[in-house]
Length: 428
Ligand SMILES: *[C@@H]1O[C@H](CO)[C@@H](O)[C@H](O)[C@H]1NC(C)=O
Ligand SMILES: *[C@@H]1O[C@H](CO)[C@@H](O)[C@H](O)[C@H]1NC(C)=O
Ligand SMILES: *[C@@H]1O[C@H](CO)[C@@H](O)[C@H](O)[C@H]1NC(C)=O
Ligand SMILES: *[C@@H]1O[C@H](CO)[C@@H](O)[C@H](O)[C@H]1NC(C)=O
Image (cartoon, rainbow, N blue to C red; front, side, top):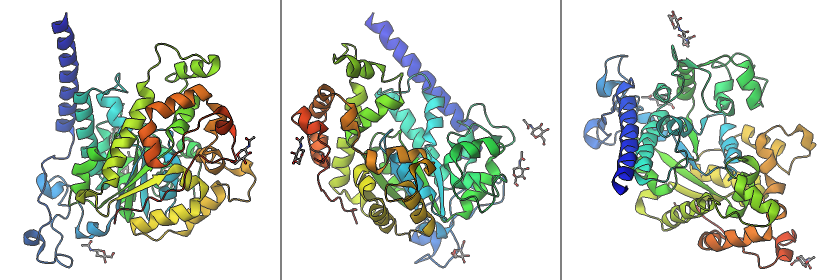
């Protein structure tokens, strides 16, 4: 009995590993690591001399073909938004996406997960997790180098002639909805809606997308499928990259409430709990506990200031951003070392509470979640559920400065904020 159970797991793991190996072999780019920039191969001091790994001529293979970065890349910023679903990450993504010099991608790891672990989308198995993380880091490395072809191995159906209409949330990337990637909109169309982009732009030409990426000074990627910051250490320490992590957190009670509304099937039992006042016996508690465990371990790592995160870590509470979007966004750009441009500022004015526009004009899905709504979960969750969440997430609530409530009255009294003033300065 026990033996066959183990065999099934082993078989499943083996098949995942084989798939991943197959993808690695099929992909057009070599995987060996190319020489790292060092005083020897860059020339001392390095900055003015020949780049150590300029792109070689096409097809030459080996390290010459590896899409890393001229020495100028040291000045390129690789922004990584580490978030979880329903934590306000679309909003933060937009703050970067709107910047003229940023090439932004919305959760490319979606494709890794659907290809490698299609049926185990919430797998917490350690071996699955390692495969997924290894593949994710490889993909992120390539994408930061603007090698978008690498992503094609994970897109289903496999793109033909380097074109696809299946890139996940393509419309969320401004650069992929603009010329030269898409001719449907002119320079005057500043706020192209995601749905319009998908409808009006033809299939995505990955060659053009790659070129668009190369033309931007910086690359920003939002991910929600990496559990915690420690999983990214290899990437953060990679000297060819210049990673800046923005870890976005949100009150787990708010995340839970938002997920219940959004992922209706997956969170069906939670809705039943909310409607009946009785907790279903077969409720999958890990849907909540995993968020809190991951936050806690990330935040503990991040805030303990390990040397490998020096200058590369900023913790942002979604609620602070929602309360004071302009100020918080400036802090984020300061940390990134980039000037915040007018586009970003305009977008904030048009899409947050500070705006004078009637709300009907607010087009972005992110608005739903912003300012006024950051604490609206209090009116949606039952006291039972809140109390329960407070018990299992006690440590992380405390660590992040979210106040627990002790009565229904406190919960529903909106003039009483549950977000304590707490400053998380970037680790510089
Ligand atoms: C580096 O960037 C500067 C301006 O940003 C440019 O003039 C120069 O040609 C670049 N060097 C390389 C090797 O790409
Ligand atoms: C890919 O390109 C080739 C040659 O240009 C063409 O014959 C083929 O039909 C194209 N395939 C698709 C799916 O567009
Ligand atoms: C994609 O764009 C490149 C660069 O402009 C072009 O050479 C190629 O033909 C395009 N591919 C397709 C399938 O249109
Ligand atoms: C709500 O909280 C505020 C601030 O603590 C308090 O002054 C007020 O009396 C409370 N309202 C109710 C209805 O409990």
